[in-house]
Image (cartoon, rainbow, N blue to C red; front, side, top):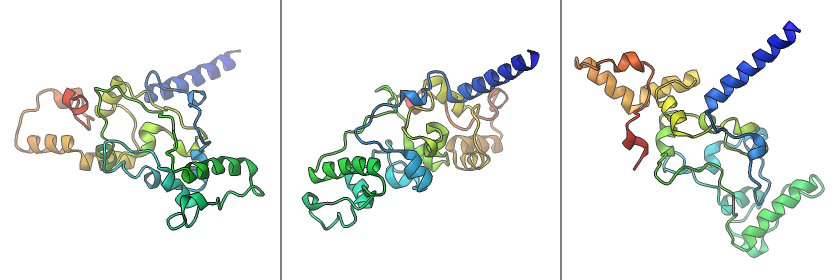
Length: 228
């Protein structure tokens, strides 16, 4: 009985630690919204190892990472789509003989292309109108997509992995959320906030109790950083 209680307690502590990293309000896989086409990240980013930046190509240059256009999708599934009139587009793969389920979903994609309609993807990560999250700043500083979005390469249907609430973001800026060794290195090398502190310290500037309070801080928590 004692062993069972110990194991249960260990599991609860682990889940609590995971929840703490993800922040309060983080969603579960069952919370994933229904999309117009079944797009499995586990197939594209996982099995086929397609880099996130291939589809979300604005992430390192814009505030928004962007949602893949139907033109980008047919570039893989309908070879020759650049020169073939959309109305004549035919699906190359997956074929019905090989996988009838994915063939049916991919035919939906071709239909949007033939009609020249945008795929009405359902947005998953939503922030209040008064909050700005510049993807380009976070990508350029060396953060991996999975740090905020979770292991998308393992997800069949993407859901909001992290809470994205203010407290969770501040915890990350203060260096309280775990980052990989590579991220820690690149962030500290590229963060304008860290570089400024290093410069001020080298010039003999008195930083007060700041470094003692948040010694691992990697980004500013000034209101204007995230709020207009």
